[in-house]
Every structure is written in structure tokens, then in C-alpha cells.
Length: 209
Image (cartoon, rainbow, N blue to C red; front, side):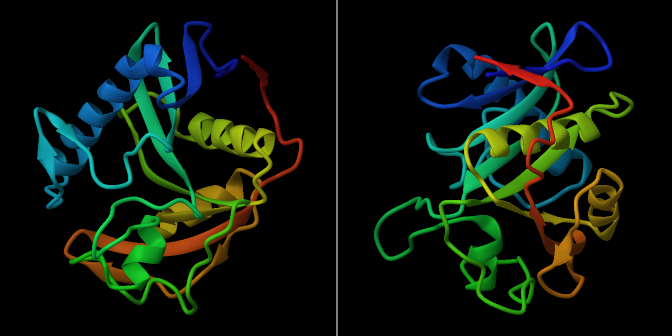
């Protein structure tokens, strides 16, 4: 699914979900490589990585990636996951990052992100791992495209985990963010989990399949 237009005619934003969009896996691989460069090499976050990419239990075949690229060169992206999905088997079964952190399943992540247990609902999604090249100007477009995608698949809410500045950006872009808990921190920085209603019909762009 291509979501556009953007500031440059050469730039596109695509929603990619495996395995149906396997022909576009090159975009996902480049996005995972960018995540490793930014989060592991630049920010020094203690995240799992191998073969030059950063990935984890939430990067599964039922995960959607919103990826901005210029003729295949990835400029930024984000990960979307429906909150009622499960990952893993055995003694630990994961759902999504905010909920699993609250439940104490993610070592190093604050457990007090939320005041109440985060939901598992078909109409609620989570957006994480937002990243973009410096100066690319695509962060806002990725978030707008994510809202457009969520609206088309019938989502009603999206949960976010980011810095307090990220929450303020959501307000500037027209959402009405509601904090799910207090601002908390760990060795990686300060974070806040928040909830935004998907904006109906908020499509600054058209979608073609």
C-alpha cells in the first residue's frame, strides 16, 4: 500500500505487512538496519541486534511498517502492531511493548508506564520504533500516514511510547493525546505512554493499492 504524496515527488510512504508484501521486504530490511544504526550505534540502547539489523519479538509477520523512502532509499519509518496480537510461545507470550513493560516482561523497561493495565483490543494499535534520518523532514509525514492507514483498517485508537516532546508533536499534528501514566525514565532517557484517537477521514493524502 503506497501512501502519498509528500513534499518531494520522489518520496513515497508505504505500509508494508508480511507476508503479503514480501516483494517489499527490502524496505523493511533497510528500516531494521536504520533502527540498529540509530538506537544501538548512536543512542547506545542495549537492544538485540544481529547481521547489521535491530529486531525483536514484535517484528513478526502480523506487524505493519510505515516506511518513507526515496526511490527505495529508506528515510524513516515506524512499527504498527495491533494490541490483540500475540507473539511467542511457552512460558512467556508477548503482546505489545507498552503492555508487556507494564507486566514486567521487558527487563530494563519501566513497569510504571501506565496507571492501569493497557488494553488488548482489535481496534487499538501501538506505534513504536519511530526513526528518521536527520534533516529528512519525514517524521510528521510518517505519523500522518500511520493515522491514514489505521483509519482505513478500522482502528479507533493508537498507543504511543516516546519522549514528552513526542507527545507535544502529536498535539501539534492535530491529535488529542492522553497520557496513560506519568513521565518515567531509565538509562535510555525519559518516556511517556499516551493514547490518541485515530482521526476519522484525516487523510492529507490518498491511498492506492
